[in-house]
Image (spheres, rainbow, N blue to C red):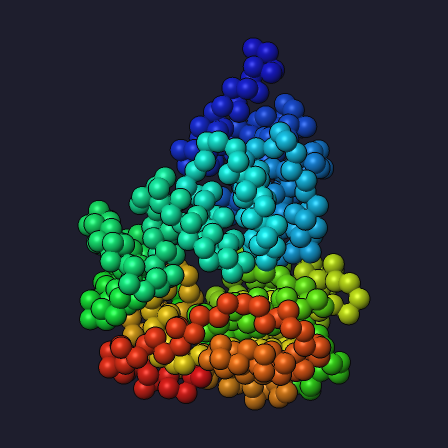
Length: 500
């Protein structure tokens, strides 16, 4: 048998195994190809893909780097490498690769779509939309491509194109659950009745207790809520919570581990400005404020990439000798013993090495509220904006968020009330330990008086205010949205009344 024939045979088998989910066999096939042809770029890339699926992100990154060395101008290789760099928290290099990748006339739609996804994660939403446009110009067109572009339009505050792409996605795949959920977020008052019936029919086709049934129930809640049918809406929300209770329990957050990182007050920063971290509960308005601050000409935004927690993961993994997550209780002692100055240098090297002049880096990731102590010890110049929101509104938004989209326990009102209390206590602990480094920003004030809030925030961050920041279309109808459910949220409100 000729070597080329054998390589082709291994390739076909590897792809078949990969598509069927037999990752071990797929890995063996692609490794077999590389034994016979060490310069086989596609085999190297597919091997990296398999290793990523198998949880070996470090090995996957190594093979993606190898593929890039062999084909530095291949957009598919560049996009995959940039994706892996983001996963490992190496944001600066991922940004450099993604921004300098040039789509040629012979590039595939998949490559353009993958590059668009990376750019979107980096907060480069308009550039991402251009890549998604290129992908959608090459048939055949998939529903997922429209959905990916829709999310980029939403992040860029382009509401009409966002809705149009969701509808285009549903035209190709009427059962695309996430599109239905996002469509329901638009709160098109008086125009949701038809969608309500569609959602009811789809719910009948999904298994109770499944994630899809949960998300469709949440979409139904949003549509009924926008129609002021609060009684029916609450029933849909209860159905979603029932779905969550039927799913495997998740590991609880280890609040004591986060708190133990910082137990004594730290001195105030010696410089007027430093890395910016915008934190708070999910659904509190962290992303809204983050996107506004990101418009500042002296701010380099990391988009939705949780770069600090990723670099913390890497440091913890090295300390423990194996991969670990920052919320594992077993890692508490290792976290406290970390070399935080080294972590800070590592973070700046991988996340902020592309800063120019007086620019400052900005992360707006809600879960960084758990890591404020670690961030402050690693980055002594860091400053924090803590976004708060009306307790009832924030709680209702968390309950109506898919279970997989939040680290908080939103399976039930009592469980969420307990996590909100713990979050409140943790933020007070950070305030006590970091006097002068955390500024509270009320979401309602940001909505009603954006210029005033942004001017104060900029002064706190050592930035000059610029009118370009106040360009986000704030939706004040989301203020006070929990009022129709106040009696049902009474216990939660009692537990977390002082959260804001």
